[in-house]
Image (cartoon, rainbow over all chains, first blue to last red; front, top):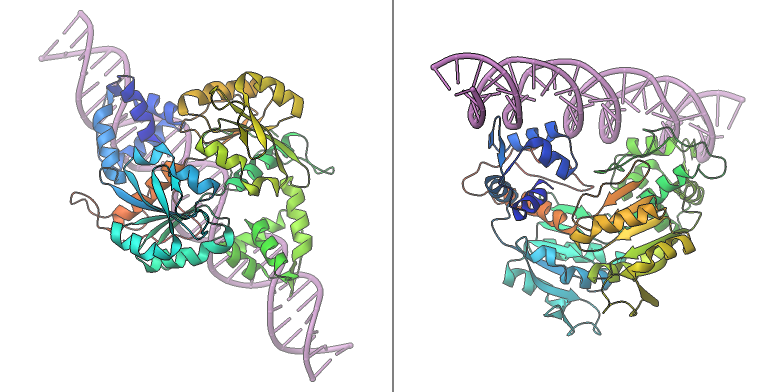
Length: 221
Length: 221
DNA sequence: GTGACTTTGTGCGTGCGTTCACAAAGGCTT
DNA sequence: AAGCCTTTGTGAACGCACGCACAAAGTCAC
């Protein structure tokens, strides 16, 4: 988030920024921002602030964005197609090495300049291109099987869009993005705002379920 | 998450489940699960567990899924298209009332059985269909403007896919999904596993940045 | 060069979510 | 009917992230 705010500042020609300004742009507390940045070292100048360009480099390096990452997308449905065409990946050092799908009617299609390949070739592609991150955009039922295969083939990071909890061996990272759960969380708060269902008393502020806080959030009693 | 695990159990014909089993399926600690469920009331039977069907109903009601929610998707690029065709919404009580885009070459196109409308009509559509949740899938530059308009038109929940921090008045909820940040977090851990960049010492376990924990995660020292 | 002002870096307190561990409660067997 | 066994519900402790507030440090003006 800081990196994103910083590059936006960079594009506007700003060369120096205070923790207060950057925190506001990133939607966090300024003390938290300073503490976060202090973990990278002391890159600020007291009385002045942080040099934008230098900070961009330091954060990029810390996040590992100075090197390229090779990604494979498995499952070329609506979501897989969107991911394949998503510009935000390439611009941040993520290179899509392959689109794979088990559906024969999709295999061979050209999507965003890439030819969809059969899932049979998964192991070849991962090994051949040095894929280290797999994006799983398959239906729920196929996700665990695909996950097992990519892990066996050497992938140690998985981004999972399928609505299932994947189990993986130690040393493998899994992150999950669940679109309908995001909507459900919003619906939950929406219901609260409307007074709650079936005579249920609205929760007091702070009674919301965990994991629902966000950069900007206001929940009224 | 619990609801998803429960419906999966329901489909397999399981009628009763213990906190231990359900917690494993949802990827959480069993004590946490019991405490979460206890907030809904005492719906378990000691010595036996929870009745799946009853729990599904209770959670659905609590989350507000027993009623329908009307959604508008603004921005019909790759991602907007994928969202429009995403089956997970309709099956959980979310109805897409409109697809809107500012690009004249997209307006009028038929996507997933819906005609893309001009963003000019945003206020009409929100008022006419009673939209309460807006999904913003526009480019970053347009997001805040669209957000301001949907909020002014009465929307009080926003799901934001644009890579910007939206500012909204009190009483409006915003949730953000940022695809490239998910990949960046994975890349960060991946880099750590590889030994860190430029002779940087790998962080000890627990030194990972906040907000990076997940259902399944293993970060090696 | 000196003083005043600005902003960083961080020790400390607070609040919250998570987990452990156990008592209470219900079912099942004999 | 009684006792054993399983599982829930929850009090208490732990750990962590966040925010406050201030001292240290560096800049800028005079």
